[in-house]
Length: 318
Image 1 (cartoon, helix red, strand yellow):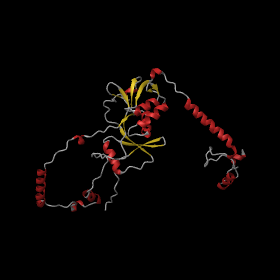
Image 2: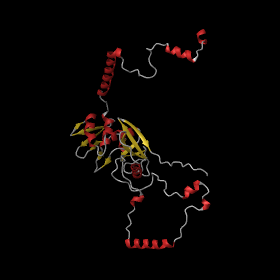
Image 3: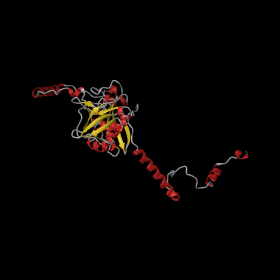
Image 4: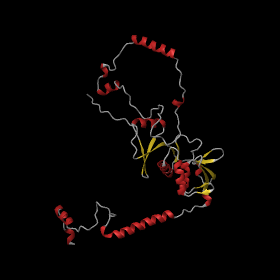
C-alpha cells in the first residue's frame, strides 16, 4: 500500500519512462503490421492464408431463387437489354417502354445483374457477372466505369437515379423576336436627339455622402453575380451533368419524374478543377435544381456541392 502513496515529479517520470525496455510495442509510429525481420516466414504464411481466404469467398457461388429473378436478353447491336420476364417491385424505377418492350440501358442492366435481380442472356446462353461486366462496360455511351460506380453508389443509398435530361426554363422557350432595322435605326436616332436635351445629374448627392456604406451603395456599378442567373448554356465544356437524382417515394413516375432533388456531375480526383465559367454553365443547365459533384478516386466516392454566398465587405463609419 505504500507504493500507491509515492508521487513522482516530471523529471522522475521521464527517467522512469526511459528505463523501460525498448522491445515493447510502440504506441506511435510504425504499425503492428510492419515487416518483422525475425519472423518473415510466419508473416508470409499469414499473408497467404488471408489471400486464399479472399479467393475462397470470391469463388463461392451466389444462390438465388428462380422465382424472384428476372430475365433479359442483351442486344449488342443497339446496346441495350430487352426484358423477357419481370419479377419484383423494382420495375417502378428501372427500364422504359419502347414498342411494347421493356428496355434496360447499360448501367441499369449492370446494376440489376450485380444485385442478383436479373439474369442476362446473350444468344440464348446465360452470362456470368464477369462476362456481363467485360461485355457491357465498353458499351457505356459518353460514360466510363467511374460513372457506373457513382450510379450504383447512389442507388444503394436509396435514391432513384436517371440519366440527365436537358430541361429548358420558360425564358429559353420564348421565341426570338425579329427586329425591324428601320424601326431600330429610327429609335436610336430619337435617343440621340433626346440625349442632347437631357439634363445630367451626379451619382452621389452631398446629402448622401454621410457614410462610406451609403457612398458605395450609390456607386455600385458592377452588380453581384449569382450562380442561379438563367442564361443560355454554352457547349464544349469538359464537365457535363450526367445524372438526375430523385428522392424515393410513391409519387415518382418514370413517364413524368418531375424536378429532381439534385443533379450529379461525375469527375475524377486527378482531373483539373473546373473554372468559374464552367461552374456557372453547369449551374445554369440544371437551374433551379442544385448541382453536386461526385469525385472518384480508386473506387472511393465523395459527393461535394458548391454554395453561392456573398463575401462580406468591411466598411468603416468614417
